[in-house]
Length: 249
Ligand SMILES: Nc1ncnc2c1ncn2[C@@H]1O[C@H](COP(=O)(O)OP(=O)(O)OP(=O)(O)O)[C@@H](O)[C@H]1O
Ligand SMILES: [Mg+2]
Picture 1 (cartoon, helix red, strand yellow):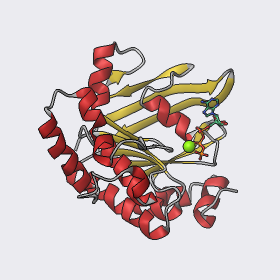
Picture 2 (picture 1 turned 60 degrees about the vertical axis):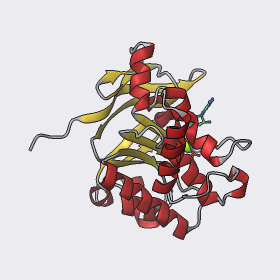
Picture 3 (picture 1 turned 90 degrees about the vertical axis):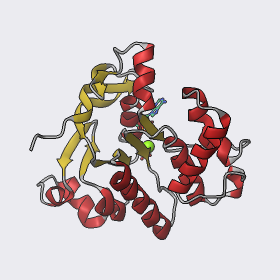
């Protein structure tokens, strides 16, 4: 069987803020249909990497290809086409508090499609169903629980039926049971829709449940890239220790 082609490719990417380097020479391929977990200590650059992978931040060197297109060399129409196939759930992926849940989920559809309002309403309800929030569209974000808010933000990220989903700490701050449900939901989306995912999390239980591969970031680099079972015996002390202790040294 042919090796699946990478949906996303990060090549020799270096990045930082105001002359301070955060990532150096990062190389990473994301394969179609996989769930790749990005982990590493707080402040190591996980969110920064994700933001570069979706074109929100421009690297100081290197490139990112999504669906074969170099996103920092792409023109505006190309970029719009690429971004239609990308869903993003930000770490502090706030819903707009003054808008109802259904209005929040409709935003990408209104911005990127010419779909009439009646169809948008049906699509929004379908997305809410997908994340098990049927019937909550008329509520305000403040009327949802923390787990429900995360799922509503996920519904918005899924609005355009992305081929790849980038999710930054989709279950941070949730209790273990809700986290497990959130993980099941991601696994279902992958199973049912064939979605590829890049997920930032440092919950060990989640990593065991969802990760096909992990990318372990440390000191600006990817210290380890591979499966969880390989990580446990990879010989890199800080990686092995994380899998023994469930926390970073
Ligand atoms: N917009 C910004 N301007 C300046 N520095 C930033 C900016 N965003 C992030 N940084 C810095 O870059 C480094 C990496 O931040 P990043 O948010 O990517 O870490 P992280 O791995 O996602 O951490 P956490 O697990 O806490 O979410 C940190 O030192 C942070 O202070
Ligand atoms: Mg982060």
